[in-house]
Image (cartoon, rainbow, N blue to C red):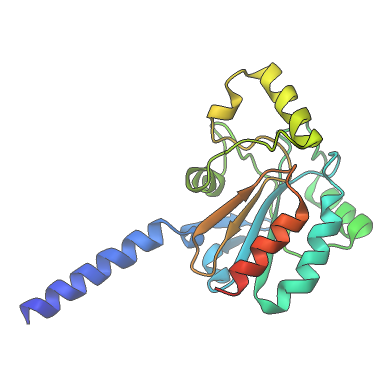
Length: 203
């Protein structure tokens, strides 16, 4: 009996630790302000993206929608979080953003309420994502990576030592168990993102 109690206690502790280290403990408002528990997405592979409608990376919406159409039936969900912190490139109301996304790129993946991803008002979800997958640098062999590095280093010489989101269209990949397994900077190729999604869907 004593061993059974110990086993149960250890299992409970393991479950609690897993719950605290997964995204399923977070609730976020959808585009209409309705609270959505991310536990809704248990068992699915997630790509969580902070987006903007007037950014040089905004055309990635087209590639994200193509990936969504290709893998959604296999268990992929893309969660879109507009953020106006980078060059104020996500202006307007949620209706404006929705109309832009559907009108310009015919996106069908879930759109959530506009949030902050850095600073004192950062959404707890993104604080957690950054803690699980910190910034590891831009690919400086790529011209886009060089441009981002030059721009950000002029603003903060030590920017690369911080886990903050650096710009729009940073992406976090979450496996079917709620673990944050990868972070992609906006300059990384969508082919690399798709390859990582394919691998996660098979696990």
